[in-house]
Length: 282
Image 1: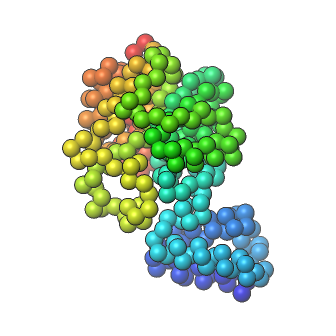
Image 2: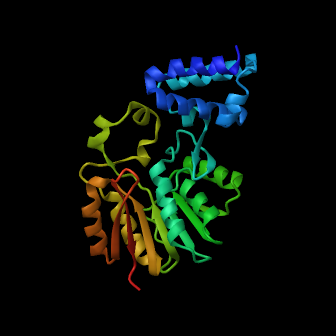
């Protein structure tokens, strides 16, 4: 069987489960992972025969995907901000919305030597992307999970990002006053009650610790982060947060009470209220 025939077979098996568009994307990811090929390479090499070894790898991958395991965990990597990050079940899979958050920070902060803190870094995607795209920043990233920090450390090393990684619990951690120019976080923000409407591949495989908050305290992490940020940011320093659109107005009110100014709720590419930016008074 050649590669063209193998790809047609893959799409025929994946499309009934995930839809045609998602199946096509999965095929591209599989061949990028196994062969380093882009879309053009796949077409050019269509007549080549598939070796028994590559065929066996494809079968293992597809079997796991059809059972509902996220392809990023199956392949052990996820594409984020133009880079391939290692991921496993100890960290969330980086999302497109979070790329928009990084893009916002990079585009709005052109000054060099910025001091940046990423709270709840997970795979290190935000921290590494900012380290690679801001001008000579000093980036610190914290997470409570030692397993997540192992992943973040490997990503920082592989992607040549000088990120300072620390195991810290945000509910007990308080950095020195005026120690950062930017604080960013994509904390847990999904209330437990929303589980019923979520896809099984997320619920069954991604770490609940990084996703969910109690129904009674949907702003649990934001409340603590705001307490930390109002002290740890320098005057005029900026706080960037990814948020649950349901609680955008409540979060703006919380930040205002904490002492922040110039709050701005920003829509994502799907026009949902997905981010909030706030400033420590000068």
